[in-house]
Length: 217
Image (cartoon, rainbow, N blue to C red; front, top):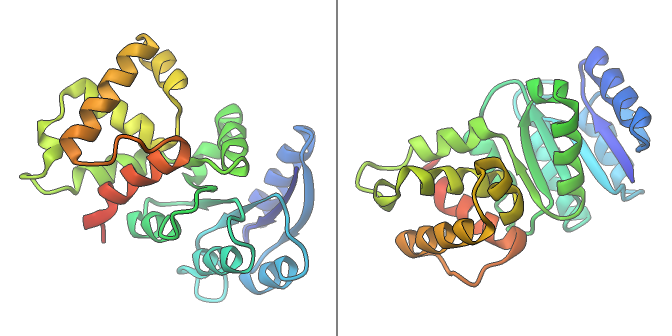
């Protein structure tokens, strides 16, 4: 797997590069600004991108804009965005094309190497990897009268893990329940939220995230 790293913090950029290389992942290039990143991907399609949301010159959303633009240049280009703070609107915008192959993690997750690498692998394969803090905020921002209020505590746990991008088997392991129990919970969740029950894989995750992000600002 060839990965591009776009991060303006030199220490984090070099740390990410070393982490990926020691994990057997090729680093195609590292850049410290969105302009150089776009110049690279216009001529070369990497297997995945790890990118900071906020980059020079204004340190607001240049990284996010560049990630969206890169996916326009290369539809479905896997992008794992890193951010120092939870910005639910950024997460929702990144997911807007409904294609999959996207992730949004807080930078503090990079220190949890196995989870970070797992997230990158899932994104590179066309899946999703959303930070639990992002999911938590999306869920808490829903209106009081929303159907989420009808979910049981266990169904909310399953919904959160599903929205993070985990498959049924992993959810069952994390909650220490059977695969059949997870499937039953998911069917109940989709019925209560009015979502199509035949969605599979990352499309199912995107449907959930679209629902949760409907009121995000």
